[in-house]
Length: 413
Image 1: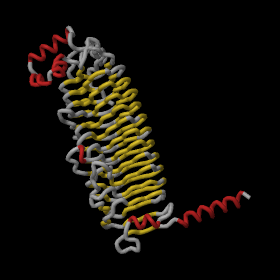
Image 2 (image 1 turned 30 degrees about the vertical axis):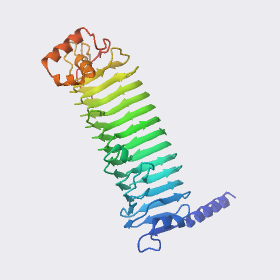
Image 3 (image 1 turned 90 degrees about the horizontal axis):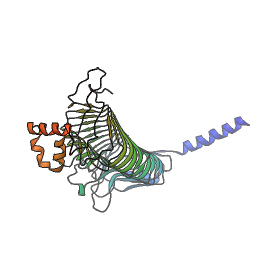
Image 4 (image 1 turned 180 degrees about the horizontal axis):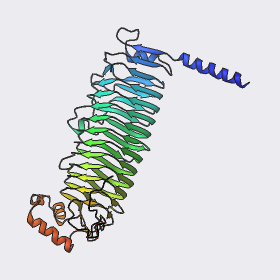
């Protein structure tokens, strides 16, 4: 009886597999356009797009589980007319396409690939150039966006879109992509339980990565370089930030990382190098900053207001103009076991911990916060005297903001 059941199951599966077909698309093939191939395809079919240029836009895939494979990166030229490919389906994949010349609009979010109300999908190893939005996901789940290269030449925020834009979705993985020259490299709004891993976001107008109202997410191993600002995490909670590099995000209003209205998160093993402000924190609570490197930034940490119960532990503060800046005199945050390149104390018992507590907030940083023009006095002997007097008897800076156990040697992690 059992043997008969397995034989029946095998025949059913074989029947399903035999029904799937492969459709080739090329200029000399029976099927010459991608949309025609989509229209004739059934669930489970493979569409193999041969090398060439296909001047098509608004290619629409609705309720069909298809595998689309490009050979030799066939070009879909949307001719600036609108979205190149839009999908509303489950269990599909799109791989190996080159999409160019997506339309631009002030009222429509035209994209290279638009995915709506989808589940269990993969968009991988595609190249998108001269796009408005690159890959746009909305109301979708259990999807992967990986290995794509998305480039454009955004000139202003009002006339450009984002590289990978995700809205109201969950369980999305974005990994191993390069996003260059867009408004935001990667943008998440109302996106939960998702991962942003090993991406390069470079030369984008606004942010390399931008979170809004998104919870329980991870971003790890990414590089954010020379963007308007590296990363902004806003109105979110339970964000895990690990092993990222924030580099060369310079400008009068530029940050490596902007934290605003974010709670209950962790920032660990990240590198902040050559940023105007490495981290700007505003109304952020219960954040753990653990084993991060702050190298050669203007400000390493700039705390603006309503920042409580944060822990800064075992971080390296290396040759920043200002290690920590505060806008007020109240402090409810803990600094412990950090290494400070500006520390000049001693260690008589040689336990690796400085015997004199370190005060990272200088009077000069307070003055610059109040009067930015005072920055011209940086490195002057007069300022050194002011800072020394403030450390001896704090008046303007938080009296209880100290690292009682500063490390004598740079921390290795």
